[in-house]
Image 1 (cartoon, rainbow, N blue to C red):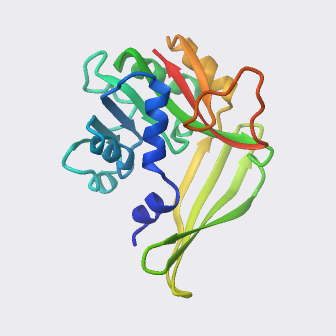
Image 2: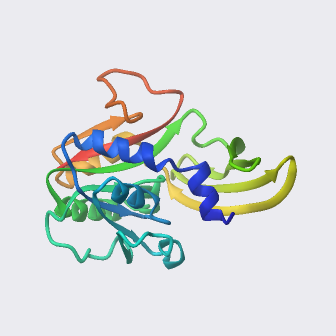
Length: 242
């Protein structure tokens, strides 16, 4: 198992992600743009459900995992996208990837361009995390059992964090065992250097970029009710509506 396979098994849940995208849109969306797509797992699941998907990422090796049904585009999300206005029903920027856009002006420009690409009633869905441990250094393990007696331990490490600048460095490690025997280790499988945008900052930027409204979805069941509390440590999706 390479690092991308482990990531898809242990970190992502394409089915849950697509359920959330459908619920966030609220209609019958067909055309998806998956930004920061990596191995295009969300786009692949979207096409399996009968939709059309474009996966955009700078990593050509990762995009090589996209299926024939997915249109893979190797490009920087900050380049003017080669798509017409209103080309998509949903834009998805998952895996906390909005944090790669560290400057306010850069993120605002990205949001304005993606607003241009959305059809009327379309949504941009991006996620973030926060809470009491967001800037705390440390490491947290999670295990996942796969077929064939395989146990995978994924470790999420907060290696550096500056609450003044909101810049953080996070690292994902994998340890693979089969029937209790160590068969593979992937230390520093993925390293992320982000700005951890807060929900109010993301909401304000989306509205400034021309979106008409923003909701927060803790999960695919629906938006956070007004005045409701989030978990002390949370991971949520911001849904910006065109």
